[in-house]
Image 1 (cartoon, rainbow, N blue to C red):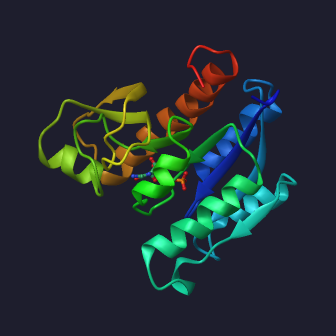
Image 2: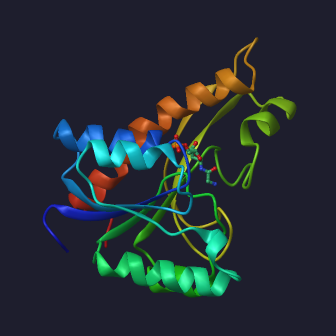
Length: 195
Ligand code: GAR
């Protein structure tokens, strides 16, 4: 294990969770360094966030690959170049192959916007509202071959209130996510979660 913990962060879009990690490092709340941010989309705003923080970025555009196996093989090689302790999925919106997951088994974390095992997959806020749930939240889990199904490391929840819609609920969950991800990664840095 590196000291501080070395991370590679995978994103596809806005990167607000990446920003939360950058802020937690800057504030001294998380003893980690981000070795690189990798995006499958060239236009992901999170790449700008990484550059602004002086972090190395790489784009591996899935559209340049004909199949999932060859994309994930290239992605695994790219990640491995940085020798991270942890691979952090932060809004990386791709289904991963078993070979990639196996290569980083136990060292790849994902954040998901629901209280798993409820609402794996997409449109979690809408589905929680439609189901009349009283609460909602986010989950951080170790990535296994089962989609959004790996062992749960931590969850944070909030009430669903009268008048909440998809946007207000998404905003509430984002606040929870931004607090929880740095806490869990710091847990690895302190050995509370084994690597
Ligand atoms: C986050 O809400 C994250 O939980 C979700 O994507 C969003 C990314 O936001 N991830 C998934 O749905 C994965 N199944 P961000 O780009 O602003 O961090």
